[in-house]
Image (tube, rainbow, N blue to C red; front, side):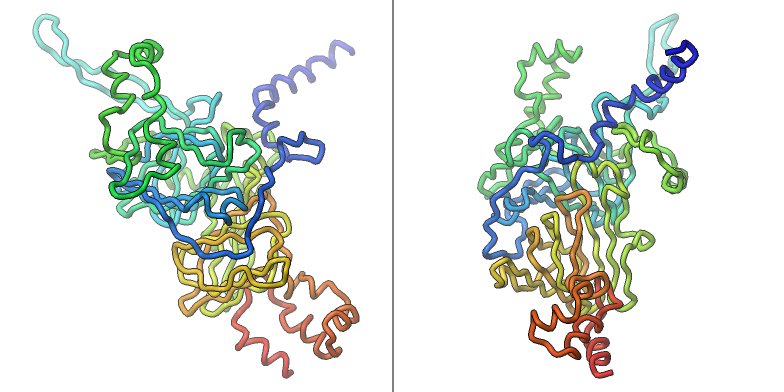
Length: 478
């Protein structure tokens, strides 16, 4: 190679080298990848499904965490653990990490979240001042300035999906006046989890306490103390470079506040103004990307899925649906997860469909709906009303439809594929629309007129249908 050609090559290597290890983690999983990198297959015993609610609760000083039973067969089928977290105003959820990646939907409230990604620099800086006394020709006071550095802080609000990879320590703080309510989906069968399918939360601070009168859950037994409490005190103090008294406080043996604590004076965090941060975020979304800027250190970890401006499917009388996948948020390519937010108007219909490549855990955030799910034996495995704060699992390929109640229906669903695909049975871009008339006539013993009604009466609707009484009957008689 000529000497002049070496320098461009070195420049490219130096420019890309700092990000190459992280960038590789975000690459799509291909069929040539080792078997261990694919999602773990689970046994699905789903002859009968039911809408479920939290069965256990762990309370803390400034909030509580509610658990949906992880031994529930439908959650085992999806390989998921689901929690609902409530954090009071000025409440701080203490730093922790877990063996499974999670998607968090913020039902209400706002706050700040930190995700401590190994190997990434502390890019946020703030200067603070202290006034101290010293003896020097009498008592006087002087100012001692020092700089605090930390990793990026993410602001979130109601409607956001927040992403936390497995093994990444995170914390969050409620700086608003209303409690934060969040639903957490942990993917325990994700390829990055090499332990087992039990959700294991590792507390870095605090001392989670058991709720009096409740039986001990497997979740509680797995997080009865923080991780530092297991180390010998003297050696821990030496390793951290602190006094034994400080190390004892870090172990939290006498801390009875739980895993969510009050910050009486509030947290003062170094963050850009919300207006500036929002404008910069929108500007970043408009810029063309080449993939190099999407490393783990600066990956976008938040997306507002409830914002009407992000809607993918909209019907004036039916409602709207918004999805988030790895095309919109590249880090989901690494997590192999996606999500969907739906807002259905009164009596609107979620038409029959199935998910071709993912399980879906559907959580009702408002209103209610009559939901029917049908398995491969052609009989319903669920036929009932799903209400607020209930969830149900829709296994891969199981057909499902829903009709919103009088007060409408709002939901968020978590899907076990970063590009989950839905196959609609009726409507635009549907199975019926793609099958020739003679095939449908022979399949269902229909007349040509009946077949055309089947193919065309809903042909202009997609994803969410307006109530049939305003639509189908008129077109059928036309």
